[in-house]
Length: 295
Image (tube, rainbow, N blue to C red):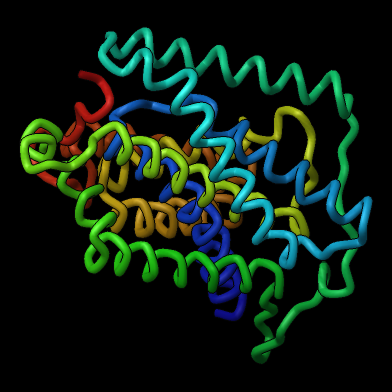
């Protein structure tokens, strides 16, 4: 019983990290309607920035997170304005290959600057655990999970209560009607892409005490993140959060009770079943949402 509880808690905590990365991707997908294949490399860049702050000035990743978030917001806005905006009216294939090219370019730049070495930070709390009976809870993973919940709540309130949030929702639902109502659609695209990039920047800072950073670290997470987004429902922030938790749980349970080598295979089986029987996702925004970003 203790082992089962340990696996469930570990899975939920890992799921919180997936959820945080997925919310940024889903916001970009739902509003800007583009599948950002370089999302994993945005995560990689944020982890490197967090590492550099630690290596150069000894700044803890949790403290430098505020700067990293701001830098990633600016970086996301620049990418959207320079590269994404000119191709928004082109076909889905052009958008996918353009962001895929950006992904490869960022990986190669990282390889050229930092080479292929694995780098990490060493903090006093890195291996700390909280014990509840026989169950051990990793402190860095618990912090990442708590931040994921906080961000999900803040994002929900931002989208529901603020003028910009309502404008983002309006553009996500019907961009032409939103434009006729006086909303500056291109500016909303810029803000949404910036916020989505800032969210993955925060995720990168939270991951630094847990994972190593290297040029292809983003590929470890981005495939799972796309599974989370499709499973939860494209464009659904609520779905991205619950989808992340679900994938984290499935991965942990399959890794312990089936085989560590098959944990990805198990959630891909679930992923395929969802595509077959509910292609719009478990918590989708409705019929047709499965084509978000593809037309």
